[in-house]
Amino acid sequence: MSHDGWRNRLRPILLLLLCIQLSATAVYGTLPPVSEFCSTGAACQGPPKSALDRLGRLERETFGPGAARCGDTICDTSREETCRTCPTDCGRCTQTEPVVKCRNRNHFALTFDDGPTPGKTRALVEYLNRERIKATFFVNGNHFAENPDNVPAVKFTFNSGHLIGSHTFSHRSLGDAGTKLSYAHMRGEIIVNDEAIELAVGRRPRIVRPPFFAFNPTSMAFLETSGYTVANVNVFTDDWLIPDPNGVLKFLQDSFAKVRDNGGWIHLQHDHHPNLVQATTRIVEYLKTLRVEFVTLDVCLGVSGYRPSGDNPFLAKHLEARVWKGESATNTTASTTATASMTRVAPTTTEISGPVDVGREGPATPLPLPTAAPGSGASAAVAGNGAAGLGLVRHEIMAAIVGLVIMMMLSP
Image (cartoon, rainbow, N blue to C red; front, side, top):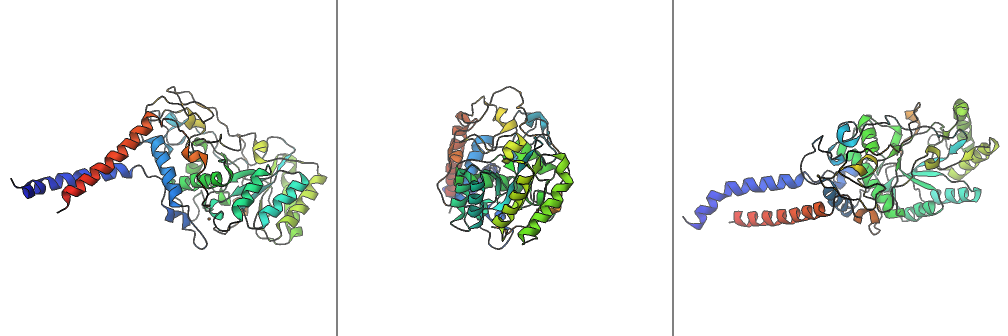
């Protein structure tokens, strides 16, 4: 038979093999593409493709190829396994709603959302530093590329001893209102924001403030399974609607009066308020007369504010004690060791619930990621990335070679 005859007979088989190869490769990519992070519209800049590629490689090393199988001891959050969908592998859910109060009755946590904001964030931090008050700042990663001053501002905030928390990458709702996010996009908003924060300050946050205070069972289950504490507020200012500093103070006083007897207060302001420092000054002066103790949110809740340095961005809490693709391996940078046992990791979230006023967080200007060098977490060793990780690298190399050979054979 002629060479062309053999090629024609092999063509359908080779096409089938190529389709199988492409589909096997496709199951690896569970983070959304860059374009999805900018669906909020004007002024938005998505994360660099290099950051998503780096996270994608680490994700493949952590979870491997193939579909998730509940009961295989692998808590595969990349394919929607969580404490809600697969408690056998991921542990049972314990936090169905965000925390809304501090553990200590006299603690008061000042929290600021939607930063950093050019000029305003640094001025606020300088004021708080003069007052020797530590606060918590929930930031959006897509702000970092909007203005070159934003990265130094968040570094200054972190280095001054204030806590940095996550407010998602592009301020997308984690609930059911509006355009509901897919699981992959919801998860990407959190993980990619962690990457942006680590690029800026060198640490990944463990406390999340959902934009608009919005959440649903899916997002809460993912966040708990992945080791986050979700925190909303119980003292409001409505500063996003009230430009006058005295009006902001009056709203806080009225809101505080409703929950004063409950103790353990978490307040909310926004970095982008036109009179941010003036409003905060009035609030602090008022609260000092009440002799509250100002604390950061990790102290308020009694939880860790950050992951361990260099920790795998996909591993925490339930995940740190799981087995990756059947391998008994050690995550050398995590706070616990991955073993082949079924031992659960004790929950780190504080089980405090309360009413949530979902309407008071206000809209945010969609805002963008630094071009700094990759942080340590993206290149750190991960659980199961020894023999399993090398195997996945070899798999990808072989996939590329096989695909190239097939395409060469199919070419005329």
